[in-house]
Length: 416
Ligand SMILES: [Zn+2]
Image (tube, rainbow, N blue to C red; front, side):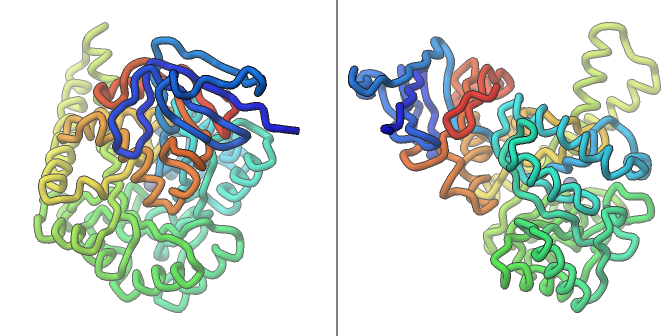
């Protein structure tokens, strides 16, 4: 049986490679993969092929978005980690199914889970593969490796010293980890210190070296400046947060560390919305409708200041040549970071100086490269999986277009 081609037509295609937008464009898909992208006039089907043609008049098509950093077991409903950790594993799996649906509807077709408890991450990935529920394609780390009592210790992968860390990597690989996540500094978990490294440089090296022996990429939670230096010296692949936190809990940008990051070629997921952006959005909306109490005004001001500091540091990293290393990651699930809002990061990256086109490339091709998935996803080119989204507006010139997702296709099938 010859494959019946699918041809999508639209107002324009931005393919994620960095090439300019193609207006009045079409995409030809055969089976799961893209066969051709070009102007409509060049891709008219032959009458004998019985092609299916779907028009999306006035709308634009770009590759599906990729979120490099999520926590699927957490609901992003504003509870502290300690409260969320009281949920059973079964409840966390249900939260994961809800989260995956929200992300898929918002245009995320690929994501990475960077840490859940016990078997939750593996179960969700394998359930999605069986087709039990709609989901972006998924890479999971299983559990994050952390020191005793460290950030996310309740996920149950505590390891101290090089020998235990190597063993933890081997255990996770054996259980099915696609990549290895390391908690290199404290974080929002009670009793941990965000401005202090949790692992020495040699412990970081043990984790990264062992992961690489098994062909697994590494990602580390690095809020502390000290942890950023350890991670870079140990050869980390992708750094989360990069907050430049000092032990006293104050963020102070350091151009020498940024230069080290550029020299070693590490990818960076700045997770800008995690500075409190959902709080800013919610309180600004409330101020506009019913007004704010004095306490809320103070909370808004504090959140705005934190966001501005992080956006300022992000801009300085771009100025120091890190533009093409920036990847999209929401940290969704934690605190009040709800799934379905990777676009919050795009708003802040734009504020920090990236153009709409640069943000689109970051959230598609560059993130695909950073997670080792570029052979299949990240651009709309012949041979790639037909994972794409239909948006209202030209995403190469208007970053808000990515907040108006009208349809989602996975492997050539419309799923939203
Ligand atoms: Zn995280």
